[in-house]
Picture 1 (cartoon, rainbow, N blue to C red):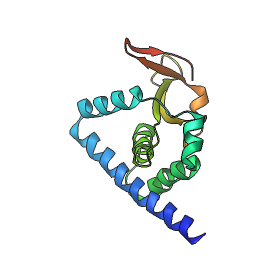
Picture 2 (tube, rainbow, N blue to C red):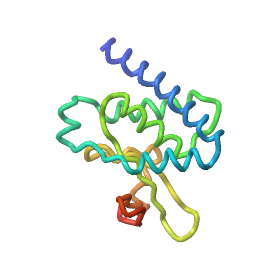
Picture 3 (spheres, rainbow, N blue to C red):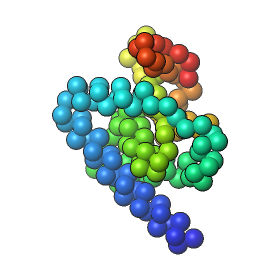
Length: 144
């Protein structure tokens, strides 16, 4: 019990670090954010079997980032949160995929992370968006 709480506290501290790294990325400008987002979208998420083999509690990792957001004085967008979540999963040795989707031709867009069969979205609205599909041929719009 105490070990689990210490692990979650350590994950929250790492999540704060990754959120701050993403904030620094944003300060470098749109080019840096675009490159990081493009690379994150090209990653392939671990399968359910790979995730099960790690024994990692997916929701605990995601909640660490969501909890860290409340501890920082600055606002984090869904893209910033998704990038930090993916960084934390990478630190744990689990491959995850960042998804960006649009709901309409307006400017309504959202970002979230997928790993195994899980959609990790702190706002729980990913189902409203059609995700862009990233392939070697470029980005196309697919289904979320």
